Amino acid sequence: MSAIARDSLLSLEHYARERAAFRARVIAHKKTRTLALGPSVTLVFEDELTIRYQIQEMLRIERTFEEAGIQDELDAYNPLVPDGRNWKATMLIEFPDEAERKAWLARLIGIEDRVWVRVAGFEPVFAIADEDLERENAEKTSSVHFLRFELGPARVAALKAGAALAAGVDHPNYTVTVDVVPETVRQSLCGDLLS
Image (tube, rainbow, N blue to C red; front, side, top):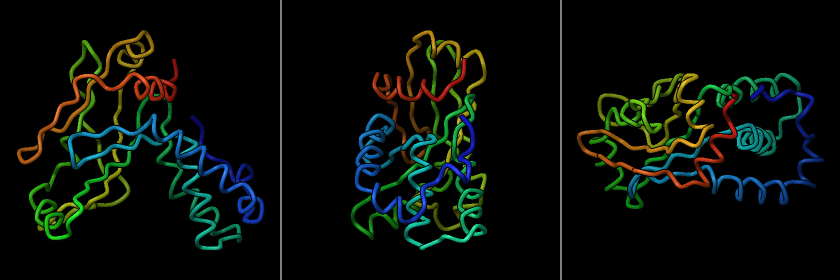
């Protein structure tokens, strides 16, 4: 995967015309890149398309058309595009009730470091979390984290050859295992990997 280049972005006017169709395409695409880890944690695996959409949306919302502002968005979001040897995901911790969410975020400090993926025949790979900035403090974790899973060539080769994929969370207050990641998700994620 390569970084999103400035000249590949749509102008604000062009994006306004294309937005509905582009948004529908991204929503459909994300269905094959979203994995629930129990009732309250969801991973959305990012790729060039999902990050391109995020950049275009930020430019639209902020009405950014100056080169420096556009470059700032590219610099902020391009690190979230996987590089062919890893997966990058946005982790969402969701509790509908605000009081319950607050209590759980206090109980789940450190959860972002306890999320893993496991290729059949290999040890789990734990996420490297929040490389851009710290998202928790002594009182609570954040409801959003950015994760990177470094797979290495042997795991990539096994996945490309059809190895099963599992995922989970190993935190004292939230433990979940998805023994078999759905094939549609596994296939979509394999598309991020270079042979």
